[in-house]
Length: 236
Image 1 (cartoon, rainbow, N blue to C red):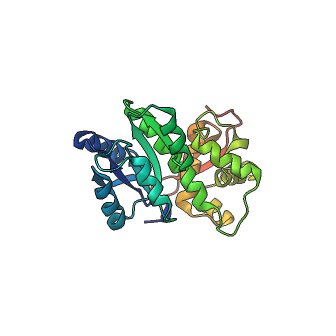
Image 2 (spheres, one colour):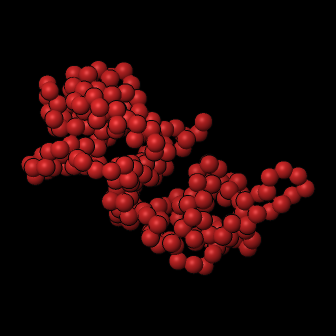
Image 3 (cartoon, one colour):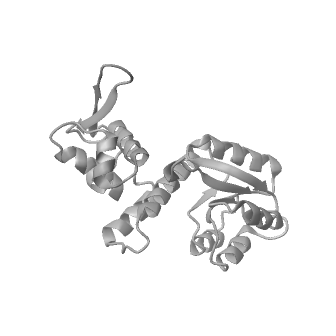
């Protein structure tokens, strides 16, 4: 399994057992995520964080032994806190501001539908993928910083123009644009030094948006090879 295929390990923390189970089941329905546990108190959350090492917390504010804001604050003080999405019935602005100050990715107010949660998780996954693709010793210019914030705001949607694509996807798109003939994922991956699964995922997304056309090349045997060329159309 490649790094791009490793699911984002998510821990659900909610005092309501039924609600926690619903959140966990919803997370399992979203591609690229897996739920590693459910906690119903801050103490349980700390124990599970220590044993499961989650990437992401889906955290309620109202917990029986300690509020979620205090829990996250104590975790950030250690310097190794997971990312966090608050899902809560707390609507007061003080809680919202505190969550933002603690670096929460999103703040979802109950109740909401599965589509809302999926949209936030998908945006978080795209943001995380781009962050992990940046070399640790590299510096981010303003365009890269803006792009990362746009991903969290959900700007990397079907209406995104090619010039606003995330950096790696933009390189894939450019490779197809300047090529003299349709390209497949292997050729682009070798040229860019990026893994083939990453390239294929971006090609499929660009094809879905309508900016690339899929060309099926049939050989003498086996499945046809997928090649791509510019569609010369605005993304859908």
